[in-house]
Image (cartoon, rainbow, N blue to C red):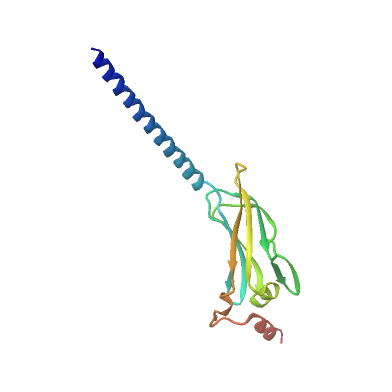
Length: 171
């Protein structure tokens, strides 16, 4: 009889050990699911300088499923927009955006290749983006490296040279 009791105690102990291992595995699975849910319901903010023929646009967009708040963008070196003979800091590249809705994009004209090269001959920029979600969780600073050096040599067939076209129109 005592041997049966000892056997039952051993079987119960093994059963408890396996139950504990299953519990730990389930807790890890729940943590992984929680991280997946957080990742799928957060904002993801991106910034880029996009060549469009001889012109450059700054683009800021949110690919996430929730709004990004207090978006701060800091570019090194700073990017200035070349508005008619009056260089000034761009709104997107060196400023704060209070609200960026999910799946939305903001664009800003920066200037021509020539104007951007005058600011930074290497055409390489480091961008730091910091923002928060509606729950107050802060993301960033996230670093993005932009290298436009190779894009300047790409020919744009059929696209007018904007400065020449403007001069021709003025004459």
